[in-house]
Amino acid sequence: MKSLLSLFAILFLMSCATKNDLKYSKIEYEAGACFGACPMFKITINPDRTAVFEAEHFNFTKNVSKAEFSKPREGTFTGTIKKEDYDKLIALLDSLNPKSLKNKYGERNITDLPTSYLRINFNDGTSKTIEDYGKHGTKKLEEVYHFFENLRFNQTWTKIK
Image 1: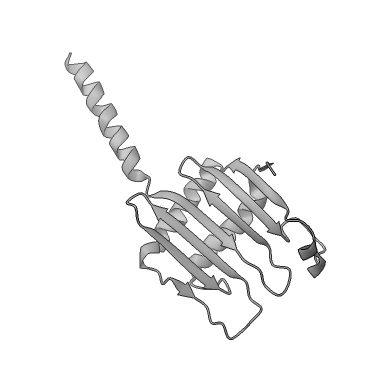
Image 2: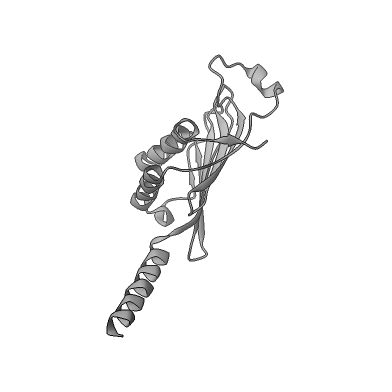
């Protein structure tokens, strides 16, 4: 009987620890347009690692031109982020201490740079949105941006529309 109670206690404690370890209820990164051929896309990642990749323009084309804008958007894709990549993303976000960051970065004196948006929903019900004109807010933010840009190519995506 004692061993059965011990087993239930361990299972209960493990389930509590797992729930508390999930800090983020949704992570979203959006890369906006520039006056050139900057990739335009949005990736949304859930805590179960399922993700949606919304590709607008300049994500898959090698020889790009502004004529891309007249083409239809590239599509919506779904996938599951590889566990090691998801764990790396969580580590990157944890190292950022996102709640302490400014809401806006970048100087608008240059008019042809892309804007990125990092939106994080926390399990405590709060959220943080970071708008970064030029994508150079901090070195750690730049790492996060590059990580998301690489997700377009290093994951398995299935086109749904």
